[in-house]
Image 1 (tube, rainbow, N blue to C red):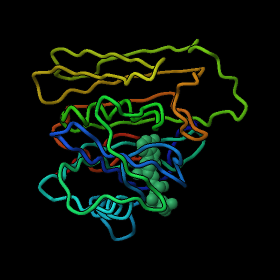
Image 2 (cartoon, rainbow, N blue to C red):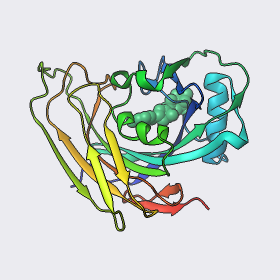
Image 3 (cartoon, helix red, strand yellow):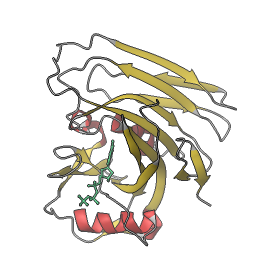
Amino acid sequence: MDPFRLTSKKVLTLVMVIDKEQQKILLGYKKRGFGAHLWNGFGGKVEPGETPQQGALRELEEEAGITAKPEGFQKAGLLLFLFENDPVGLETHVYKAYSYQGQIRECDEMRPQWFNFADIPYDQMWEDDRIWLPILLKEQAPFFGRMYFKRRPLEESVPDQLTNLSTSTSTTSTAATTATTTITTASATPVVVETNSSTPIASLSKTMTATSFTPGQPKSGPFTMFEYHIEQNLLAPPKEIALDGTIASFEN
Ligand SMILES: Nc1ncnc2c1[nH]c(=O)n2[C@H]1C[C@H](O)[C@@H](COP(=O)(O)OP(=O)(O)OP(=O)(O)O)O1
């Protein structure tokens, strides 16, 4: 049976606060709970009766003390996190906030800090962030991603170097004229995904398989990402993910 088969999903949000002028991003150090000890954007579970956007704005206020201004608040993409032998996927709505009001402050869950784009601590973030965050920072059109996580063995031996990494890339674009992809996973260097297309819809699909891990890899709790799929340059942000892992609908 498919260990990544979903029967339900939880809806979550993630807000990346960006200072375009200074080329900085506000991240929060998560002090407790899921993803503890990693830097991440601000977000959490969408509550009953809330839209994802309302949930995102609420979580940003709770976790960073600030209110995103509507004119600078945009949906950047949609991500599905799948975990081996767990039938519940995490449908995560990702937003960009380019302006805000209020005073940034720490809370019991998150410690906010600004980072230069060049100094983003990818090695202390969820592993998937290095796939999609560069796309978001380049202000490219909306993206969609599926990230597959396996439970990390408790007593895993950690080799000095990445020894067994295989990568395969396939371009599934219907209309892309050119597409270039660089995948760098053996160091803390962010994965760079570039699609150079003259047409509005391009979909770049990649599969990565890692069978050993380096000390430099992120400390994303007991999980490690072993495969992902990303589509970018979408015409509109995806709104909902079907249980088969595909985009069910787009925002208007
Ligand atoms: N893999 C990955 N990459 C990037 N970001 C995330 C993940 N997995 C995730 O869950 N996340 C993000 C999505 C959310 O913003 C948070 C998790 O939210 P969580 O802390 O569980 O939700 P809250 O509602 O704040 O939790 P409680 O306060 O109820 O414990 O991480």
